[in-house]
Image (cartoon, rainbow, N blue to C red; front, side, top):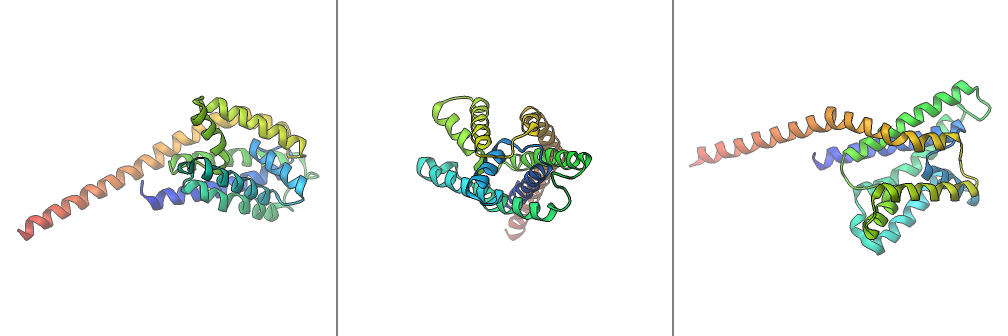
Length: 225
């Protein structure tokens, strides 16, 4: 896929990520691992969750720049710019639609939308294959440098940030455990659908266009001889 298409996919995925996190937090049932940590930072320092997210991602990117800057990609920078503000914007927009006092069915609806939205968002920007987000940089780097399997590093990272976030007063709940179990398979399902229904046709279309352009150039060169 071309640069423009990848950028659009990543941006949409990151905005949806922000929407999903805001819905998780508003539902009151718990959030994904990194959001538990960011909510803990927000609670500790008296800032918004979006600002806590931005601060954490910024620190991760700065440290990575000194450790091995090749891990920093377009997706990394976009995640820094987009996710935090998106969380705060959508939390403000929907703060009156759902509260801890809202009927259980409303809160469950927002939680379900958040779960599906986040899984789709992650699948979308992963399918773009445009680099890793700031949220995933630590387990990726540890796995590479320590020659360990990524999934084990990811599990260890998630447990660590959830525990820290919990003690900082982050948004831990039964939803956090549910997501830890179900997120992976759901992301993979959406990724398979996106890659077969969106990415593959786009690549085929671009390859056909490149072939047509090459044929046009060849015919033009022959005509000029």
